[in-house]
Length: 436
Ligand code: PMP
Image (cartoon, rainbow, N blue to C red; front, side, top):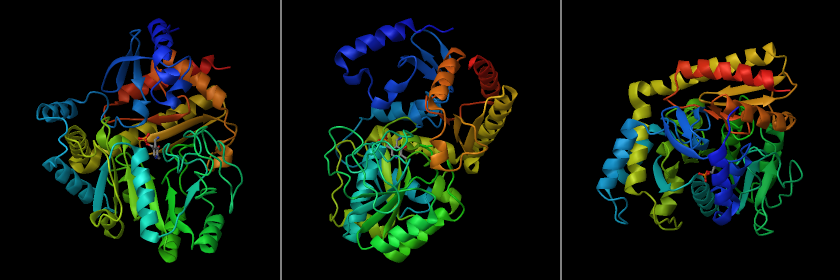
């Protein structure tokens, strides 16, 4: 059994002056308590108690090249030596904008910011400015960052404070301190329900500026869009003068070089990207059609941020994307194959141990859950999973040398190998045998 003595002491110390003891509220959910990293390289992370883990948390998604990737580290360091950020323009911004327009099918132009939350804020603003309307349709179980205008609950945390269903659902703020009317412009719908979508968009098209959706419901069960569903969003939004925003903060540079929209052949008006784009350095972007992005050209829409497009972040994104683009994006295929192997292995172990569970996998993302259902394809079924049991499993896996997010979502990087997958499956086998 691992002990986490130093982490425990550090966490107690942190709570004295660091609000919440962690830097992002979600991290407090880790069991037995939030652990402290010492260093990390490739697919492995070492904590301050000298335990080494195969890492599938991957900093909640950004580390697509793994930890401390040599080429990425070198490009960050050489960019830092030339100055971190200028406030002036620099050619790295142009190179990155050009590269994003080259690889993202929906992009005529891009705008940079620092986090997924900010990218979503900008996308919503562009949609409202373009349409002159204010309502935003979003979906149960999706997460689009923590800004007041859209936050309803933690990623994957179920319905949070939202109540109602279908047309006219009322949405309450997800956290204390959010203004009581901050979500008045949000219409919350069940995802993957073509009828509810069509009737709501048709009956309220005069008010609705945008539909925002994750392409795959990564934050809640890695649920896939039903065949034709994203296409229906595209068709209805086109027809009704509504902006279609695809939130690719997770899926961008993870489901493929062209993100989920490239993979599925959908052309949204705007996409938001973050996480994997910078390989672990803070950067995000909105990419989209000229019709919308020109609102920034004309200054109709203001887009600000002191550190937007800074030299270090743009260098990191350029190197990350170029690495991923090598050999026609072979890295994505390899990561996907490893996760197919891992998912199949976990399913086999669940049945070996007679423990009901489901593994949903989509490319280099998977979601494992304990649930007595043959499949989990919708959010209501996902909500029946035994989240407590999974948190115990994640804790057992730590002691087996595997770092997991306590909610079931696993990420993989280009640094993971088949050996890591084999070792992980041995760990899963041992952890399942200890799970009552
Ligand atoms: N959108 C999606 C789909 C996300 O998963 C996240 C983060 N988990 C965000 C937006 C917000 O990104 P950030 O945490 O970088 O603000």
